[in-house]
Structure formats: C-alpha cells, structure tokens
Image (cartoon, rainbow, N blue to C red; front, side):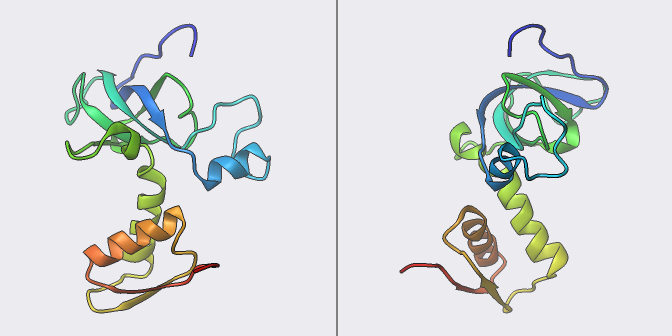
Length: 157
C-alpha cells in the first residue's frame, strides 16, 4: 500500500499485514464470479496474519505488537488494514504468522458447519467429500478434536 496508513476508529484494530491467505473465494472473485464482491477496483483478500500496529478507542483485547490473525471479508491483500476488533484473534506462540494466515476462512467455515449447522456431538460420524482440500483438512482436524468419527472421500488415492 502506498500513501497514508489508515487510522482505526472506535472498536477497530489496525493490522500491519505480513501474510494473506489465498482461498477458493479469492480465486472465484478474481474470475468475476463472486457476486458479493464490490465492483472493481477493490482489494481482495479474506484472511490475514500480522501484528497490531494501533488500536482504536475501547479496544481491550489487543495492543500494539500483538501477533494476530483476522478474517477480513475483503481488503486483505494490502500492507495495512483496519478491521473491527471482533474479527481479530491472538496467534498462539506455537503457530507462525505464515500458517496463521490460512486459518480464518477455512477453520471458521469448518467450525460453523460442524458446531452450528450440523450440531455435531462426540461419537457421531461425519462424511466429508474432498477431504484432501483445505476445508476438508480443517473439518478433519476439528472433527477429531470434537471426538467425531470421520469418513472422507477424495478423487484419487
């Protein structure tokens, strides 16, 4: 990003972006098939990792220098990004910034699908098509954490 660095407003966090995830929604957007995308020109990017550069008033959970990941909706492919505090999470020390950039979209989708939509409970069985893809791997990991039995399909051995 060239030019001015944005300033966070109340309840917002300014992120210095280090890595941005690339996922299926981004690819669909680039090809012009993602209806919710803004009209060009716009900055794509649904998920990022980096450090907190500044916080707006009443932000209580983050401070300058924190290593974070964020779900951005759009705008992640930039150097500095402002998002609402609710879209930001601290990265545990065992996860590097590069890996963390790929978490928000797929792991949120997997969690919502298993916990909120399917209301999966320990001991139940989950069938996951395309288990070898990004979302499939996230479903597998979360399902195992939730003590679910997982059956997966893939197009090749």
